[in-house]
Image (cartoon, rainbow, N blue to C red; front, side):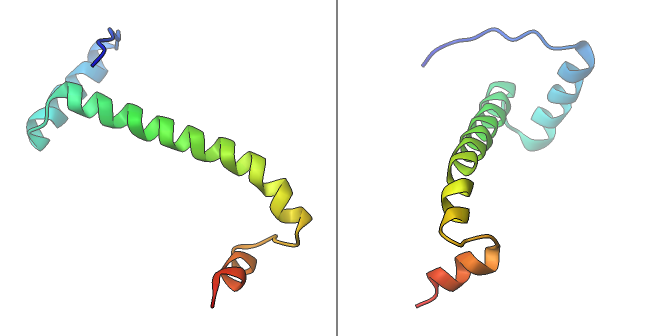
Length: 72
């Protein structure tokens, strides 16, 4: 496992301390989860940006269009 150093404002550190205590989770665990979520959202947005033009070119414009394709 790698180690990184992140500098955060004192107010953010205080909020992180409070949440860590409330949730009984280490600050490192909270930071890892926040980074994991950020990376997942970033990857999703990237894939969506690539897929929307392909979907639209195939007549898929709405969520209903997607569900219609997926229904058996």
